[in-house]
View 1 (cartoon, one colour):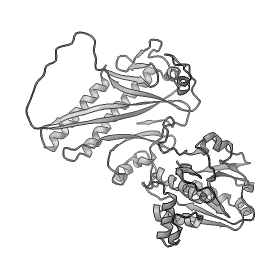
View 2: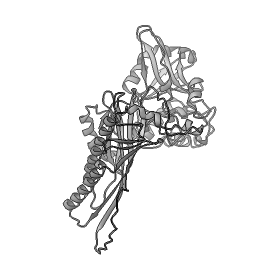
View 3: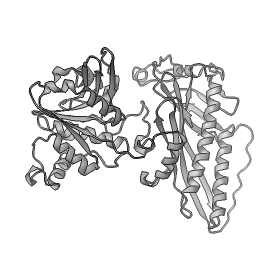
View 4: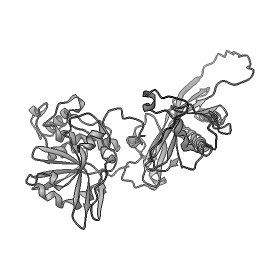
Length: 470
């Protein structure tokens, strides 16, 4: 299932909820087991299409029965109400903390795409007389399977879509996802053991937008390469970028990252305006690593370590590697292991530079890097073409070291005709909290001119090269 790029204005409906998968396998014959599993999925299809299917809007009083003529409560909302008007009924954290909770909320959403979260539920009580329960006991040996299917569907709406239009498409998405889950379940069966199917969303280049893919839980990316190749062919994607690795799963803005690091603080900045200039930026997601994080006091000596960590986070979050971002001690131990440093280097407060960053990337991540030597800072102003080409073709963060300072370059604004240049700098010397506004307002992440560099100091730049893999 595909929806439009979520960076544009509009609303995304996202419905999540568990569906209980339960079946009894009375035979060990593979074909018979597959038939039982398929029948169980057919039952789940019937539940989703039944009048018992209920969708509730999170943090609001809205309840929608999509198979009862898209019946909505409260009655002020009708099937013909515009879908984006649902925002008016959603309770925000700010309103709740201010004690302004009520059944109807007049919230204004921003011009950017926003997400309406819904919960998938099944109504278990019915009106009218109830028949007496009948208990039956049967003694036999069988294999009983029970698991929870984590349904997670997204649908993009336009400003003219009514609730009826949007929720009909949402039901189609739910039934389609059940079909995909059935395929994955049957394909990865191991005897009478089932692997839980897991839906993930991936944001593809325009105009493809968000795509939902179902993977089996527990099967590593390395064993899903054939499936990823098929997806690349299906969506006409190049085979040198890992669009469909789990680490590349789309992160919704209303879900905080569990590790606490800020991601891509540069996206809130306004690009500089240059005569006939273009902007070339880092591609993908990275986390901002700086002084004093991780209960580590590296103020005054750890800036290159932090820049290296930011680069490593980029390779991890693009799915190129499956290891955690290395600590200072792991970085130092790596340099000792390859013979670059003496054993006493581990646990010290000694600086590292671009060459050491290159060595660690190659040893820990198997990532090669190019080194750009600049004899004095004034020469950096003439490196616009090389830096622009790097971000255009490789898209990785650049570590730059000179004198006693290290920084991370995330992009350049460069004019080929005038030679004007600005550098997008992520400064690892920041010692404060993860406050995006402070970081951007105070220039810890910001655009800098050529005078930012020491005009007489030499600089080495480490330009990591992106592996060409699916």
